[in-house]
Length: 104
Image 1 (tube, rainbow, N blue to C red):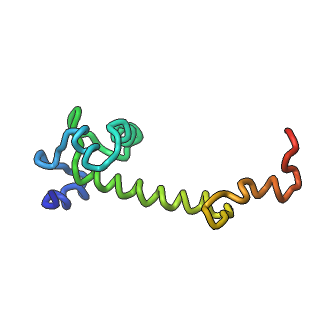
Image 2 (cartoon, rainbow, N blue to C red):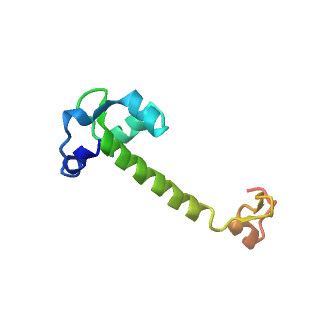
Image 3 (cartoon, one colour):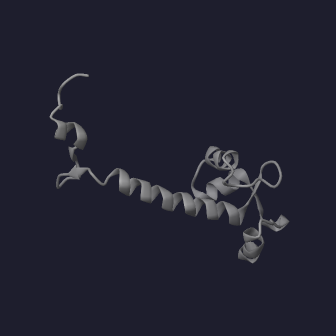
């Protein structure tokens, strides 16, 4: 599995690194649709129909996982929660402008 690491970084994939998409999705804990989305947007290469490189799939999965945590952090930055984790303030801009409760 990791023997192909260098080839993956050079943009070359080896035949023994190819895994069927449903098996790779199950191994990563994502749906097959997620893998196909990564292929469609160019994040993951499909060397032949129905197969992806195992190493490249893990690389993309790790990138997506770290990106998701960074996005979650910035989205939740202005949110205040009580001791039970419930939202106390959900829209800082509306409360600051004094328009809370008014219809648009």
